[in-house]
Length: 370
Image 1 (cartoon, rainbow, N blue to C red):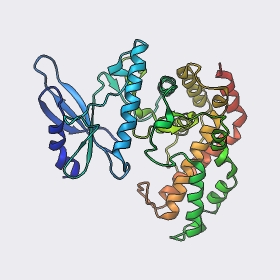
Image 2: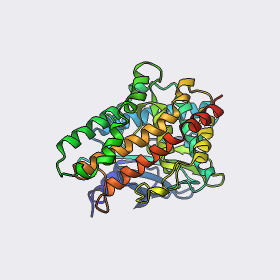
Image 3: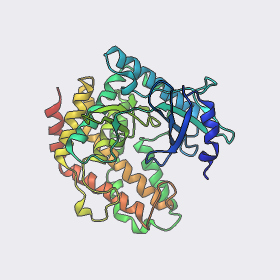
Image 4: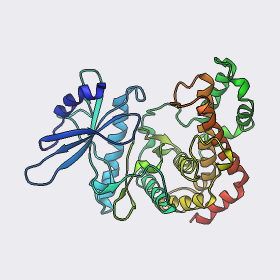
């Protein structure tokens, strides 16, 4: 039995679910937090469900800062949705505090627990099997940006320091190459050169931010389709979930990570690089939907830098895989030898494909710029 199961009853007892709890089961496909769906049975209506999570102490060292971010953002989103006549309970997450009134409950082993109401009549897909689903995620994440456009991003904590600091990722790769603790650098010459040839690229977005060209915004930083709840009837994005990585950042981070993950048809660890290609049509579909969702709230400079977001998020991810391979696969789980090196090569192939179609990407962005 895991620690989460051992402390589950403690957590259940610490929250008021409004009705007797009749069951709690493991839920979802996440690999970071321990997630349970809690079933309750009110006397006067059908079963009500909640999401109960034990936050990962390995991934998040400061649950107080993490929950301060999430509570601040979800309450702000709720107010914005209510102002626009939307359904606050379906369109934004809501944190349910424990009986103590604190932002989260701490169990006897030091684990931090939180609760959200379950958003009913929604579905969650692990991958965008159609262009329509990819577009739905784009509109949802664009709307997320629009609703949080006036939120003071500088007040948010960095739950994972330097998460999208590409200069820092590059520096860590150089350190790993120099130390070469396992003697793996000799087998990674082409990949190391690939990064070093693009060293200047690693500063493009950060230089623009430092110059004031790109403003700091609230960013989600994990903009995959499985972090959007879609209405079960319309398949339109309803609610953005998994806010653990909500931090101050640049809008191109969220746009770029979506493109990296969704605008291709290959696995992240595909070994046949001939199958790894950027889908230009999907890039266009997502760009149109994302900008529709933002509702004209982005600056011309932010929109112009969107292709850079796709390239930099993909390059950065490849750098992270390569660094982890060099130091002995300490961060990303692997299922075979050279797994992280394969992942790295896939990302770099996507970067090369983006570079080969750069003028097309810029043209698509201009086409949908209002």
